Length: 202
Image (cartoon, rainbow, N blue to C red; front, side, top):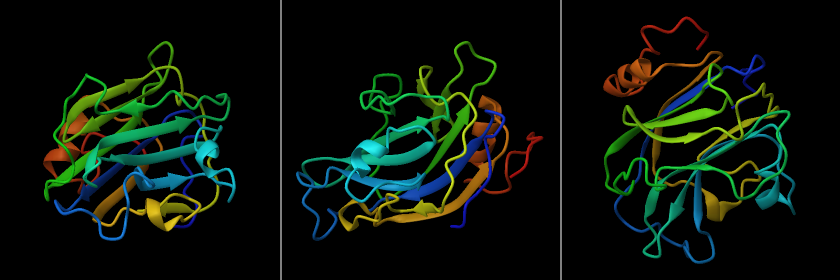
C-alpha cells in the first residue's frame, strides 16, 4: 500500500482480520524461517532487516511459526520516533496475559493495535478478538512516522520465507487511539465499519 499517515500526535490504531490455514505452509522450513509477517511499515535494509525491525519509526505485526510450521499467536514490535533500539522488547499474545489458541485454526481472527497516550508511561495495547491480549509500556507510545510503503502479508524487505500465506481483510488505520469498548465493537463487526464510537480518522 502507499504510505499511510497516522500517529504524528502519538495517537493511532491499526485493525485487521486474518485467517491462517491449519496446514503447514508448503516450501517453508520453520527452523530457518521462524516468523510470518502480517504487516510491516518502515524501511528495512536488505542486509540488516532483522535488526531494523527494532529501530525507531517501525511497526511490524507478525506470528511465530511452531516446529510444525503453524502460527502461534501474534507478536508486535512498535518503535516510535524517539525510541531507542532494543531487540528484546515486544508485545506477544503468548506472554501469559492472554493464552490464545494458535492462529492456524482456519478461523478468522481480529487484531487491534492502539496506543495508550493517557497512560504513564504511554505505550500500546494489543487486542485479539476483542480481548486484551498484551500490553507494552516501554516502547511505541510516542509520535511515529514510519514512512514508505505499507507491506501486507510480508516484511518490508519482501523476503519470501517471511510471507504470510493465509488471508487478510479489512485493514484499517486510525489517526487516534481506540478504547477497549471500540475494540469489542470492531471484533464483533469482523473489522467492518470502523469503530462506532470513534472520533478519529480511519
